[in-house]
Length: 163
Image (tube, rainbow, N blue to C red; front, side, top):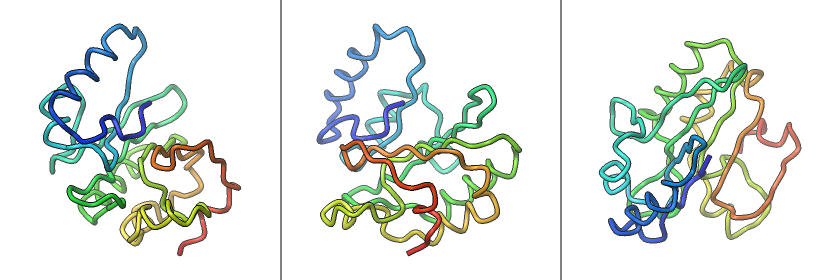
């Protein structure tokens, strides 16, 4: 899993270079977008990665006993995360389709982590996200982020507290 910031500026050549770097890998790679990425450039250079019906780079994969959901919190022109109602509808539909335990992968954390500079650039409006997972929280086993660029483990109940 690559949880975002696949490039620094989202330039086309950076995605060409990323493809070259990933090409020798024999294991599957599941990338998602970060705030430094360009959805348009990513989709052009990684056309084999699924996107939802609205063009957001969101997709689901079965990981044995788990359902892995890869979310798109990228919003062009800003560094904080956005998870709008359109994206949230996709998430809610995937959660409703399966009874498996869920692994979520997203770039921006949706709860304060305690680093002020990063909290200011996290998922700022969480209403749509929390609305999407409402009733499914018990099935979410792990959430993976990339935005903070640090090893961070929150107490399991920390993310359940809505800001």
